[in-house]
Length: 264
Length: 186
Image (tube, rainbow over the protein chains, first blue to last red):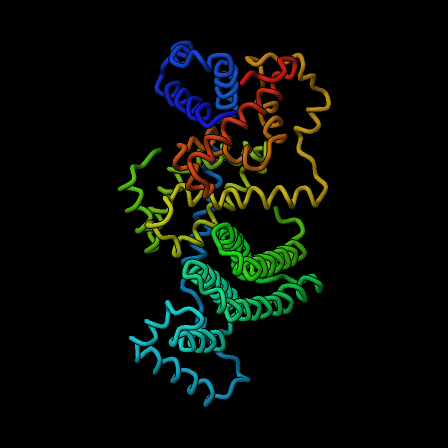
């Protein structure tokens, strides 16, 4: 199998798509004729059989479910930053002030947003994120925030790899582990226990966790890509991150399946 | 229903702002090929319907974070579709379920099947024997009707790698669909 055969096959598939007859396509590449004929007829059959028509009733059913879900998703959301009664009012006010002051010094916080471990502004980014996590109390919103934090760490790892700053990776890895541990705990409390007691788990939380699983698959793909181009020194840390994210994703997936065993 | 790239960008932005009809239009523009792609992977129409629903719900939820700069909308949707199909197959295999096609297969005699009479189930069964990447390429190219470039973006591979996989997948399919023929010549 050669590079040129890959290209010739693709050229012929394009010609066929434009309505050029099979014989004419093959005639353009006489040296490949013996292999081209069988491959093109296989492609034709495969395409014909895979091009199944979507039944109208299926199209309408799926659309109806989606529109119901859209309405559910876009109804006014409950206040996500509500605090439980156990948090003293003074602490909530102080924390809000911290966030407000940091928000007020917008330039610094905004600049810190793209900081990576080792940068002078990185601690600002870290404190802002941790404060927001502390203020976020609804399980749904916390899952969403954890998902965001994991994505941030993956971006940092990619950025550090691109800049050959693998010495600072341990900071991102340590934080990544902390986010995933926090999420594990949340899943155990909100999904594990409730599932064991056969009580209903909040549908919104289930959807958020399912979204988390999908997002983490993308995060894994991104790290795999980064790994391919990383210098040797960075490889062990990236492999650690990959393993950690993958295991955490599987744990969430298992918890979801345990909570909804008949869900397909 | 097809929308051009400019219309699609406008629809995506409107849907991101919460426009329900814009999202419905994006659904209409993409559901046919997404369903075909999923059906090619899962074989069972009922499974394909459920997974197609899930894919669009995922897309709906993830829409606010979608950025046009990186990946075209269709390729982004196929990434979600790929993950959903793979997760579904894993769940199905963990539950020990088999596809109806496995049952059909036991009674088939592939040696008697001339290529012109090959059925949908034989093609899907043939796809089951391919590697993940080969299956993905055929699903995206022939069921999803993506171009080489779009397939490369959806799979996060180079166009050359996609052409190579397409070639190797078709060779493998030929061996499965026409077993009496043996290896095609290089």
